[in-house]
Image 1 (tube, protein in one colour):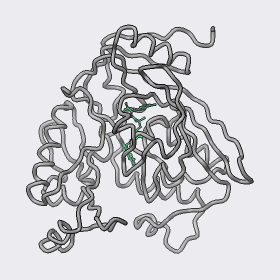
Image 2 (cartoon, rainbow, N blue to C red; image 1 turned 135 degrees about the vertical axis):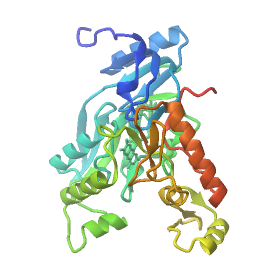
Image 3 (cartoon, rainbow, N blue to C red; image 1 turned 135 degrees about the horizontal axis):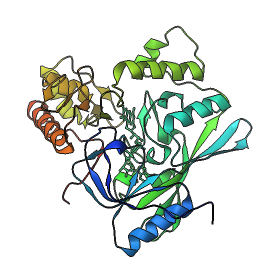
Length: 344
Ligand SMILES: Cc1cc2nc3c(=O)[nH]c(=O)nc-3n(C[C@H](O)[C@H](O)[C@H](O)COP(=O)(O)OP(=O)(O)OC[C@H]3O[C@@H](n4cnc5c(N)ncnc54)[C@H](O)[C@@H]3O)c2cc1C
């Protein structure tokens, strides 16, 4: 087993370099796994000691409110394999540690299309199903076929199809009944060599107006828009959108539109409406606000930024925003990143 050396367990490991919010925090135990065998070793270690296990990918969708008890497993499994299941149609399987954006670029180079709207989303493949990542009118579930995961308690391999994953808006079974139960090791998507670009999302349609764009041009436009709109965590630590866009009942929408005629909203198939959380936060005067060592980004009110503060400070600011939006609009904003270190 020379190709799979024993994993190194680090005690009291520093997690600040492993989260894009760059908040301080430590893992009681930490290890990096490069393949399935090492992953099973890590689970063995944790199960023998009755340690809880937490998966870590790129650290771009979590907030450390305090230290993490138990074993944090940093999944670095790599590899991309494709098989053609019908002429021009491919099942492409990505190991959990593949960087999402590099995987998108790789697929474009191979002529496997479908992921272009999801360009430049930070993080790794294994985390993509957790919140069913989405951007510019496309969600992971639109391309998803299946995933492989290891059940933490038993070490058993499980295969889950789209239905089993129960995908929703920034949601899946892994944020609900399956929370903390699995380590996802591989994700399989259905991609096609026949370009079918989707540029219906308003800002994308505007950016590409008058063009009949190729998937590569759609990807480039998405990257351009994202770079203009979103702060790069390398320069200003953040975790992307800190709140989900709330979906409200028709009755509340009517009431709010009475006094806020310009409130943007997007009708949903079930007669409810999605309201941009950024607009609500902006209306409450938080955009650009700095509170001690944390703040709200000046151009994008949905993004909380860290200037050297702690997870607790970020959460305190988030609570102030939630209270203000609740009071003014009667809307409860839900936090998007996974929060670790809170008492159960
Ligand atoms: C600037 C910025 C922009 C963003 N834009 C978008 C966007 O447009 N759309 C969008 O949907 N998201 C966006 N995000 C959020 C984030 O990029 C995604 O949620 C991404 O999928 C997180 O990947 P990660 O590897 O960093 O996950 P991590 O932050 O490491 O983990 C997130 C959660 O998934 C769990 N997890 C991670 N890997 C695994 C695994 N292999 N098995 C089981 N559980 C696992 C973790 O335990 C944790 O609960 C953005 C974030 C940033 C910082």
